[in-house]
Image 1: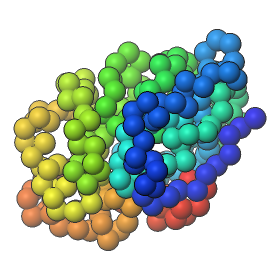
Image 2: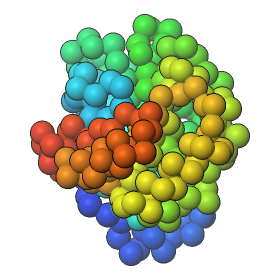
Image 3: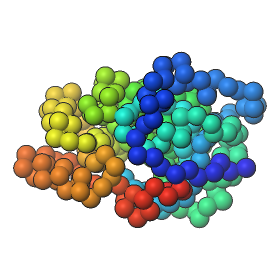
Amino acid sequence: MQPPAHRHGTRLSDAALAQDGQARLAPLKETKRKPEGVALRVTEIFYSLQGEGRDIGLPTVFVRLTGCNLRCAWCDTEYSFTGGQWMALDAVFAAVEAFPPVKRVCLTGGEPLLQKEHQDLVRALTARGYRVVVETSGSRPVEGALLDPLVCVSMDIKCPSSGEEGSMLWENLGRLAPKDQLKFVIQDERDYAYAREVLSTRAKGVKAEVVFQPVGGTLEGALKIAEWTRRDGLNARVLPQLHKLLWGDAPGH
């Protein structure tokens, strides 16, 4: 059975923010209903348009895995932290291939790299000719199948407004290639200044494309960031979240 689509939120609840590390990982430790063999805990699988990054506007199948080790204050997918259902790898493929054959899959979360089986899923998808975008917070190692030329790693750099800027594995920056993208979600000019500093220091020379995106994905937020980047001459792609502009917080997008 395919997991249901969920409605996006606006920011985290106090209860989610208060969870410690053990509580955050608890859903992935509940394995009574986990099938034999390779299986993943999945929150939802749906077909929509890619709303972010270099593939913006392209039809894509999204596989959202359950569980996240971070608690960004403005996160809009708290529903992915818990619940979900265990699905065998073949069942995930069946759900993906039930949609139109666009040959693009976005693996997202939560934090999909928490489940080591993401490697099996990514390898199997690329073997079947899919272009795969893997969205990650940058707090887990980028390695293995994620280095494949057919895989775009879309890695966040957490800015101060997220409350998680101390969670980065900075060594991941050295593993990014021109096929990948480095994303900053920016709430205010303090976040923008942080992003600019990272790009001139830790991320200097990184080959991935840089994407700036406003918290909430709004045109108003994108306009502010656009003015700052124009003022400072930064070489970054500034984008809203297309799916938010088209469908708001409706489920399945």
